[in-house]
Length: 126
Image (tube, rainbow, N blue to C red; front, side, top):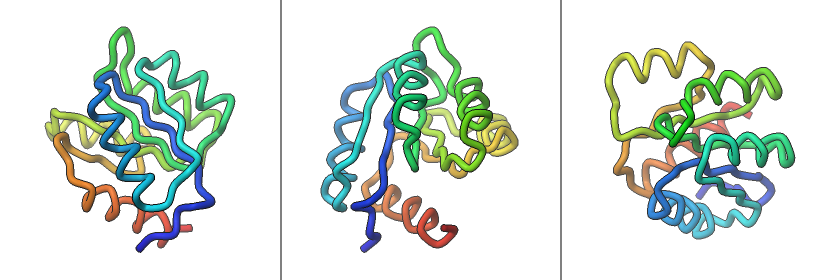
């Protein structure tokens, strides 16, 4: 089990079910410092206010592009651990996200085991 009780999280996704699943997965793992946003603008506001340790960021958001938001987050916090989330795992999406500084890429629909694996990698790199 990954010890995540002292970490803060930000989930940015326009789909409530995805946010709920991620939040519940993190809570079940022991997280208690979780922020959420359904838009890119809300995500950036929460990011600037809370500077979370780990961000789950949807690529396709209403009126926003997650990859552009990733760029902005990395300018503010260069070591931000940003995991891109998308239903479209095209080679271009993955390649561009990694080039822009994403720490990982998760394809929807995902399992709680996949989230555990991402968090384990974060802990190993700390």
